[in-house]
Image (cartoon, rainbow, N blue to C red):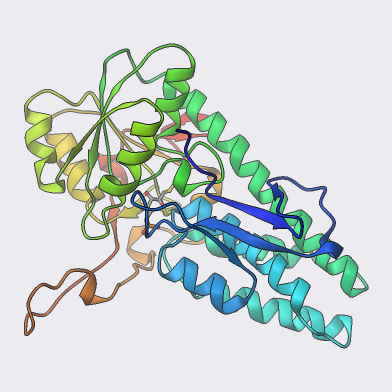
Length: 342
Ligand code: MRU
């Protein structure tokens, strides 16, 4: 079984598109796989209203920084196709309001606002049809670029791997988190393509289990040797000598290299340092936010307590991300190669 497509622009005839060259005049929808149901059920959703796109991002039906950016961009394009605007000026106002609304769905991954800003800036046309075409072209450009960036990240990162090496990862920064083959998981896929396999340890990733449900599943169906561990087992697995490298994704990297990623990443970096295991962050350059000097300014999403609570009366603290300080990171695996300075 192959990994299903994470997201696409689906035209009115049900064809999936990932690159520019599609007429916006025919209309289409944002097509995603509902990741809240994986791996039990593979259900696709067709989204065409601002509320539906917002809800899908907020509820993690589509998730992972690059996938959120691509989905929001395609979502904005399909919503614009349905606006009933009486003038280009009114249409532009509606596009900008929709972009701001979608941008407010989740705060931490910078790819969301990066992609929406890129789409809004691409709208320079004089009539509504032209504006809609520009939006769709830009959204699909972002999507096709993401596919290429993932490949380049994979190629760069595979150089760090050796046959049979233990690779520990956290959350899901794979194909399900991007339009392509992923970021943190891309080196693993690239290694496989070049003829050798590694052994992956996938943290389960409490509380929403992106590791146990998504990473373990996408690697298993791709033929990768994957072992799920509870988050609390990572240090022990390192002590047992099973881990040669840690590779994680990123939601936002500050100008100094401090990195926000799924909650639990920071403690993993501390454990890796203690055990002298290299700790790499895989990311496209669009995840770097140079407007932010260091990690203390990265907005951290606080999610609903009912994702965790098992007992009425107990308070819940549920930050969805943490920030790993630059000094705990060995290097960055990017489309421009492996970097120690970003
Ligand atoms: O809350 P999520 O599932 O969207 O969090 C995802 C992560 O933290 C990923 O590691 C990150 O977005 C990088 S995805 C290539």
